[in-house]
Structures are given as C-alpha cells and as structure tokens.
Image (cartoon, rainbow, N blue to C red; front, side):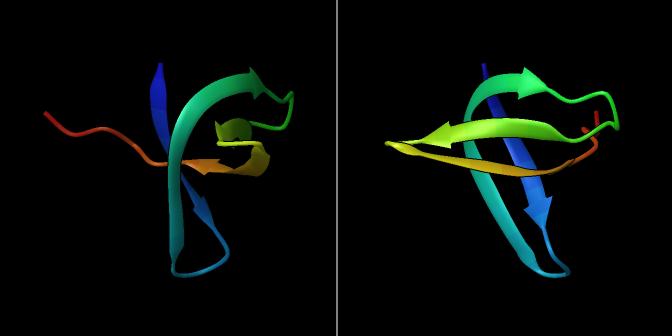
Length: 44
C-alpha cells in the first residue's frame, strides 16, 4: 500500500508501507531506504 509521510516541517516522502509504530508514526520503503514519519491525513 502506498503511503505519504511528513518528515520534519516541509519534506514529504511517498513509498510502500513497511510498519506502523506504537507512537503513531509509520515507516515507508523507497527503493532500499526506509523513512519514518507522521502519516499525511487523507481527504475525500
């Protein structure tokens, strides 16, 4: 599943969902790298 996260104040990353952490952050994979950040809330 493709997810978008916010890293810091102005950088966003989109990648494959790897795992959800207990504090609400999620990890996404982009190529061989894994990034951790807060998920972007979806809008309808």
